[in-house]
Length: 312
Image 1 (tube, rainbow, N blue to C red):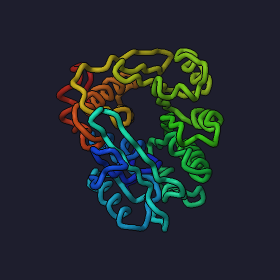
Image 2 (cartoon, rainbow, N blue to C red):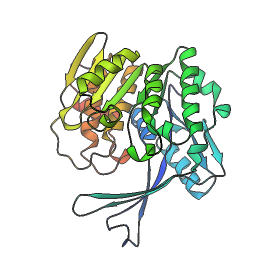
Image 3 (cartoon, helix red, strand yellow):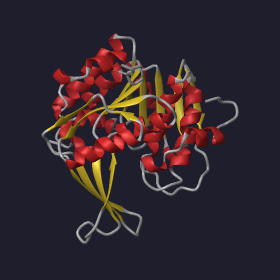
Image 4 (cartoon, one colour):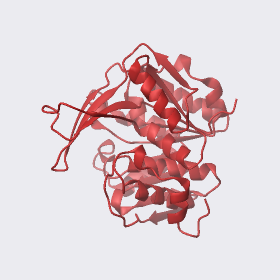
């Protein structure tokens, strides 16, 4: 079997989207999204063989999700169907520009990912395994599964990518710091968003956070700073990469586009700093259209907008 070179683990939720306040809305449009799924889609859009590791509910929404993944060229052979509901959220994009979001993900299908049922052959044959703190926060079994999966990949010489991607609502009854530290200590590549991830490091400035991350041992550290660009640290060097000046329509999923393009670039032999340039280009293109994966650029679009010093 030709296993995915990038295997991403987490939860993809069904989205029901409206332009009216949720309490007043009478109709919704259907979509889907999840941070680690978005990463896989961006990498696949650029040509990587990307797969998704998750559990999907055995219901019509589950059929919809599987079909959607396949339509995005995502390998679904590591996905299991289970008799649990799929995670779902309602999102209202209001005329004021604000958003209302209501989640229904307790005991969701993805929260039942089990360390005893991990797809071993996929993990020992992948080049990069990617997960996030959202993957860890779903349940104790997903947390254990992520740790075990990462360990299996490392044992076989693969690399582990970890995106902090902190969501306070998922950690209301738990302290994320020990879990996050454990994941960072396993990872070769760590992505942090500033200032969104700052609550995990109370009373620390970004320079102190970077020093702390370095002590835990990742080979590559990426700090995404939105419109300010990103900072890439690797091989005892660092490079600040400014964001491209572009008309912004929708920033949802831009960080995931950055991560997916970065990992794709590493898989194709670019160094971390070149990968940061590719990722910045992809993220800049993604914010110019509405939606998440719908706005992710193609390989040709990225190449046409990429600095001539980088060959992708």
